[in-house]
Image (cartoon, rainbow, N blue to C red; front, side):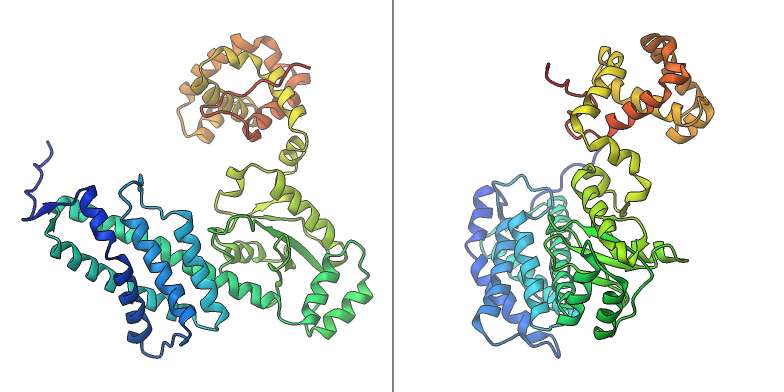
Length: 412
């Protein structure tokens, strides 16, 4: 039984009309918050140019307008234009040589001042919230501002990384040579000596997904990593990728940045590692790239082979898994995953159940549904490879509608 709604505070309710009236004060609040951020932080100095001040004020005004948009179905995630503005703010601060801690401190001050003045404006207009609605507004506001702070930090770090990548003509010459299809070890050694950098024996090239501006850039770049984030397809050259502890260092460096790691190769074959990493970035499903850890090409070779030709993969799915079309979409999804795990676990129901985090009897019940659909061919050794490929392709195809059902290819 839920507690009754607390009585509202005296005043008018915070309805759509009231929210629109609060938006009228956004320019004044944004200007006040920007001024406070520039003056209250000890040792923090904003440039005196009007454009710099307007950039901060504009970002704050855009954020407040988005937060007070009564027409939006707001779920706590700022709109793309707002995130872009704060990322641009972070990049501008980095370009001016300001520290990320100073930027975050300034945003903290600006947030506090904006919240204070917004509350004053609400009270001045006689608006009221119930305690429950007030608590919800605070929670959403905290989530909203945290997302904006992270966008500003991402912009600052991204600009810093690009600046490091452009650290001098000799370093640019070195990375251009390493990534060229035809490079000789002698030329590489000479270029590394001119750039005052050691030449690694082996490298893995990491293709970074630069299409998503809202994604956090690499958390930090160790000194031995060659930075190609300024290139058309951003990349990093990671030395000695198979050494002790190197994989953990690579993943810590990338954080949540979607990226594909090419295979470890001799430094003279870095172009091959880059080509395969880019191929993975172009072909692998977005869900795989957004999993929170970098994708290593060498561990997903079968998947890459399957997605090289979408039409062939779709036809294999349609031919081998056609019996699943007799089931509801939700059943298709569940039984296909069970069947794939069953094949990969050597037809052992207990091992399959452990992988799927379910009970062995549940797996057996699902198999009783599958076996009549597929018949004896399901266990024929000659068909095992086809089924495995079809089930993996089913998972990888990106044009499956929600629920797991796939589209049939057009008749030819």
